[in-house]
Length: 397
Ligand code: NDP
Ligand code: MG
Image (cartoon, rainbow, N blue to C red; front, side, top):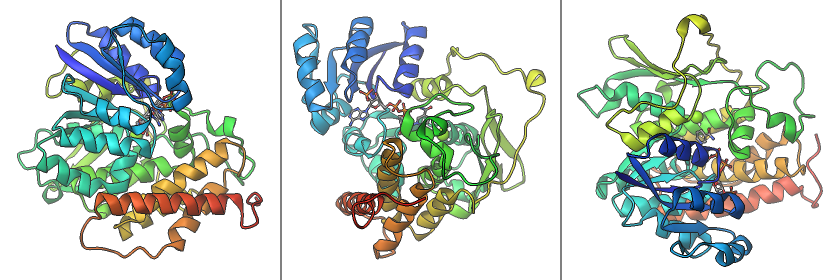
């Protein structure tokens, strides 16, 4: 029986993870759940899964949770303190980190330093400081497994290889993208409203990643995540639009052989594998019927139209603190777009503004965590300034 702690249990990944647990009651036991503010759903999960621990990040929500949490469930402190405590919980065999955004950074480090088996959905920390994180994983003998479907696909393709020096055997990575709701739209995207950007054609996900998928920033973040996870040169990573979302990514080996991982687009599969690895269990996902699908399309993305994708690759090429600045500025820009404060097309403008405002030294060494946090904070302030406009107004379309 594996004891699982789920950070972000009320989110899209968190709920899918609980569906996996529900499908295998003899394999998993939920020991901890955590949310930001959705106390109602968290409480329902507490009644359904009987964890020993719960955490609520938001202070107001935490106060509300304190009054209604059943006896026998320990409510951890609010804010990042509760999350980091949960991330290092001695009673958890596996920690699933499925919070959204850079708030997952400190809990991830806490899990690594507690030498945990970590199932990582929260890609933002791997963008901010992936190389340094991988060094810590090695140092603390933690196990870090990707949940995001593309790195999971690559991980699964590489499992049979004798070497862990992936760069020596991989000639290309085909990083697939559904393309989001706008890859076929002609003309300007300036008038796109949040509800349109939130209508993803293939995946049902949280709001931040759904907007990232619409701008294709998500693919840029994943390229950085994959480069760091597998220590691969950026130039080996090729983004392909694949609207059916059946091939979740593929790798081309030195001899020209291409290995791909395929399934219907359902996050339960990569979540389950990150929890059961190295074992495989039956998964509550419909099997793939290739005859029914019959056709798989692949296109090159338009880097000029989807500027966020180009910005992410540029930041990755520069390395050092640029990816952390990119990630922080993007989080601010997406939040402002969802709040109706800036147009869709201003998201890349805010990110570009933050990236070009700082002179981050290109360093031969990956930055340390405090440098990353400093750059993250600086970029947030800068992005907020840009998004607000110089005189406090809104960015013009
Ligand atoms: P959601 O927005 O659906 O869920 C986020 C979860 O994190 C919720 O439980 C939310 O709580 C919680 N949360 C948010 N902020 C905090 C905080 N400050 N402290 C504690 N908990 C917090 O996001 P997704 O599930 O879609 O995505 C989660 C992560 O997984 C992201 O990093 C995303 O990029 C990645 N990912 C997601 C995929 C998907 O299919 N959804 C696919 C691949 C990767 P509350 O409900 O109270 O707000
Ligand atoms: Mg993905």
